[in-house]
Each structure stands twice: as C-alpha cells, then as structure tokens.
Amino acid sequence: MRKIEYDLPKRIYEDAEERFTDTETGHTIAVKKAILYGKERDVMVAYRHEDIDVKLLTIHPLKEGQKENRIQSGRWRKI
Image (cartoon, rainbow, N blue to C red; front, side, top):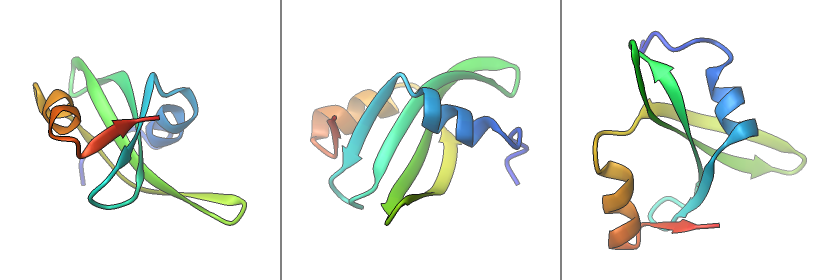
C-alpha cells in the first residue's frame, strides 16, 4: 500500500537510532532515518514483544515535527 521496501521495517527495528514507548497504545516505537519516496526522512515502526517473538505492527514516515510533538506531549517516552 505504501510502496515500502520489503526489508525496511526489519532494518528500522534492528538499527533504530531512537526508541520510544507510546503511552497511548503501549507499543514500542523504533525510529530511523531512511530514504523513502526519494527523500531522507524519519520513519517509525511500531512493534510489540510476544513471548520470544517480535511482531511489527505498522510502519510510516513521520511528518515534519511529528516526532517532536509526540515527545513534548508526553505520548512518546524515550527508552
């Protein structure tokens, strides 16, 4: 749907530059800069641990200021 490379979510999860807990959903967020749609941008992957497995839930590029707004509002807490 978003035309994202197949292995990009896994790369973001494994090599994240930042990780957060989303206080609204309880999910963990991994953020990494990546080339997406011809531009370098922050891309997030939401995931959760299920026993010994990790389930990647969603991936999408962050809009300008979106990460900062979520941190400032307290929704995302750095881990």
